[in-house]
Image 1 (cartoon, rainbow, N blue to C red):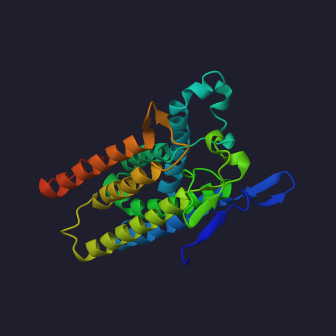
Image 2 (image 1 turned 180 degrees about the vertical axis):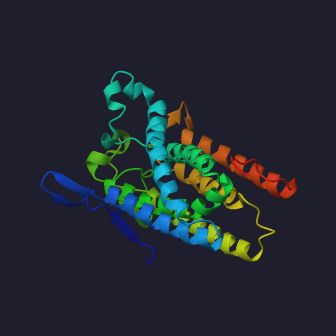
Image 3 (image 1 turned 180 degrees about the horizontal axis):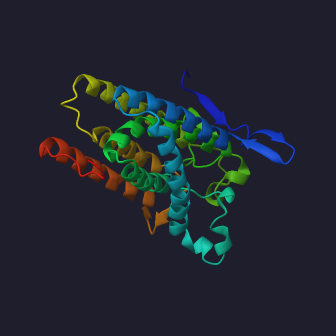
Length: 274
């Protein structure tokens, strides 16, 4: 079959240099950051925004995203850390969440916009395409780590997971949904949508209101995350509810409200600086 293919990770390490290991996850995140900053600078120039703001913004967002991703994960896995508080800062042992990273990065961006005396929503529109592309690239880190996969499947496309990485309830299953691939492809589609809207907006400035791309990002990314999260075996849970799905539904609602505010009520968004 044309669509019959099997994924199998070659391992999380690109090369081992004595005690130092260069890992795929770190390489992909660093690559996504560099590519994202370059794209955001290019878009900034198109909107007559100083492109030099974007590298500094990226640093600020990373400084907010890392602790945000860890704090979010620890809060929803508190039972695992309550008796071992020394592991809370042990990020190298795993345990971060993209929603926490987005929240932490957003807070950092708001503070950055305030001190730089620039519009937060302008920055958000410039960062949104770069962010979703970075998420699409970063998801391949899950592939190399054999993590964040879905439930078992016998579909023609499938992901082989080694026994030591399988949940106990699926220990006898070999093949799983490649949810990293689903989300990566979804994110690339969202990236294409945001870029199309951006360049359409350059020709119709009076029609594309500030903040639109940020809200479309929230709606489009979260819509994909809702159904993809339903396939995963490692979701953060509160009782029977998957946290990522709850947060994603909230983001969709917020995004729809934001677009209604802009286009139905035709009012500008409150900003940290005008």
